[in-house]
Amino acid sequence: LTPLHQAGVCAFYGECGRNPEVNVSLVPSKVPCLSNTPARAAGGALLSLLRRVCPELARGDNDTTRVCCSYGQLVALRLSVELSGAVLARCPSCARNFANLYCHNICSPDQSLFTNVTRVANFSAVPGTQAVLEYQLFYRRRYAEAAFASCQGVRLPATGGYAISTMCGRYGAQLCTAQRWLDFQGDKNNGLAPLQINFQLLPNGSEPGQGIAPLDAPVWGCDEAPSAEQEPCSCQDCAQACPPVVPPADPPPPFRIGRADGVLVICVLLFAGLALAFLAAVLCRRGAAEV
Image 1: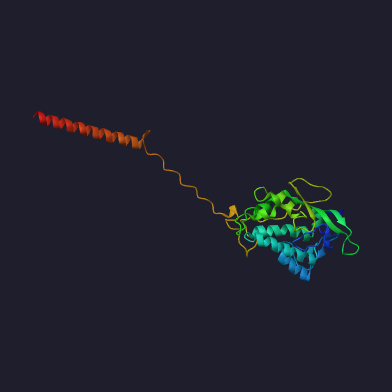
Image 2 (image 1 turned 90 degrees about the horizontal axis):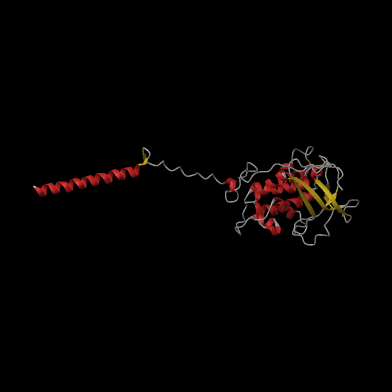
């Protein structure tokens, strides 16, 4: 359903109504329309909102910035980013990396390079289009694991636990991995996803073929600031941000006299001196008594 995988080409675009397969959703999001067509120019209100929600995708002005999302899709994306930001706000780099996962997913002008639509339906609210119900996303494993690592240590002050435990389903924080983390984000039954997204994490050198190029975008480490106006994550949320532990100084070398223990030699000499003094005192007293 995505025959053309090429830079500057979308896999879907616009909104095609609610997904009838999703009964419970905390976020009233709509599914996109199948559209394997060139990316659209972003201008006016769309470009202004893009600079706030997905600044990494705002690469220029109205003539050079292109996207694969409509204004309505970007508004829905902003709501999702704000919800995740409330949980991950303690670590700006984590929040930015997580937002970028969805920015590239929904708005990247090269969307078709790493997206493959696998299932559609004809219930679309837009005449002549089909609604996307399921698709695959191809990521480089390095990219996914780096984004996951930046969020792994972020804590929730209210509970004292890890934020990642609320974003990994039944696995919780201890058993969560980059793959399980993304799988939960793409599960249409999680109460947030409007459709099913199947994440494929590929190692370097592994190519899926058919023109698909796994996404491998830049990622900020939790000890890095995503912008000049922001700070790195705190030590409490990021082990890499903690100051290095200064190792204790080496113990002084043992006191030795020649090859012998210096303290033992001094003790022996002191004992010998006391013994000689005692013998001398005894002999003196005996000599005085004989006189």
